[in-house]
Length: 79
Image (cartoon, rainbow, N blue to C red; front, side, top):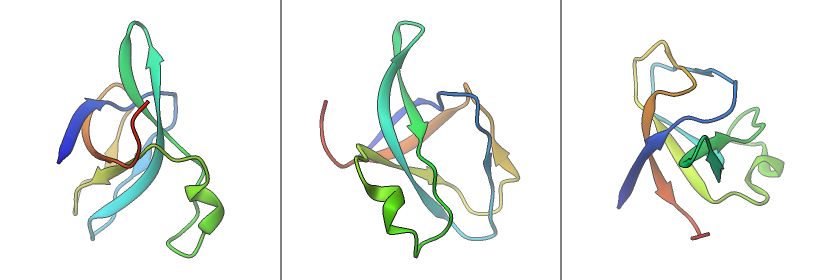
C-alpha cells in the first residue's frame, strides 16, 4: 500500500519520462511526518538504499516534486 505525506527537506526531486522510485527516510518536520529523499544517483547506486524507510513514487512525465508537496511512497519499514 502507498502512504501519502509531504516531501520533506529542501531538495527538489527531478521528474523523468518514466516512473521513478526514490529512496527516502521517514522524519518528523514541523509536527508532521515527511519523506526525506536520500542521496541517490541511479538505479545502480546501491549505497542510496542503506537505511531507507520508504520508496517515494515520482510519477512519469512530471517536471519535479517540490519540498512540501504531497507525494506517495511505499513503506519499507515502520518507524
